[in-house]
Image 1: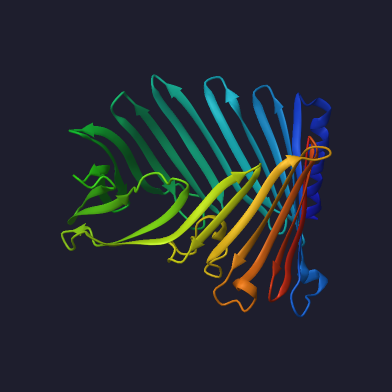
Image 2: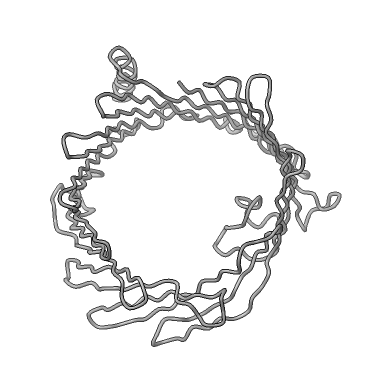
Length: 376
């Protein structure tokens, strides 16, 4: 019953504002993914459906938005928001409803600029707890400062128990630009840290250092962090990695070790067709982070080639790309392991259609996607 009530409100909101709207716009997106495995999945398991409806109403400097999300489980989420100004005050608010569980969260914020300073607050109600942040910020030509006072907790009960205060600042000192933060929590002084970036190392133009000096009640630390810039790539992209350890004094010194080349890439355009190639045999700089075409595929593939183009179709722009991936453990011709292809067609100004296919050379077709977007 609650679900039907909130859905009815969303529909009434969308239809009612159409009568008096000064500006009414929106977007409807639909995506269908069909997965096939060996042995075949059931239809319910193979089908992944997602859709969202966004309705935006603008009037008198205010914007009201309704976002409804649907998937193969049904009505998944409902959000409402409003932004605008009253005099010198700027307001923003958002309320989230979960159809399966009712109310999700409420957030209300406002700010005002007075005499070169900005003051504001942000109020949040979620999960049976409440929080309130009071913010003041300002700057001169040299000094920046921001003060945030936080109230609230994550427990049950709507109180405004004081949680802490943080002061962020920035100023020039000698030849460096200093940034930092001063913080207090329920136990008192939590610490103050000063940061500087871009410390130049003489005769090593590709190496700079960042330094962070932190003071706590019973300790002080200085941490050095190296940054590397090997210059702009020319024609080919070369992926470097530099090993470094330590740098947190007084316990350890900063040790910069081996420089390795993890891969190479190429991007160019030939007669309106874009060609992209990448080979990467190194470890990712971050867990699961691979560059270019290999991003999102983990460590399964080490090399990929792609051709793509965008041209005028019968009714609007037509885009197409196809990529082939190589796996060192593949038993197929040339170690080819995966094909990916995607196409988009702008049928009209308000309607775009798209389709994609993933084909595993060993396992067969893995994923077929169909989607379209309607904008008004």
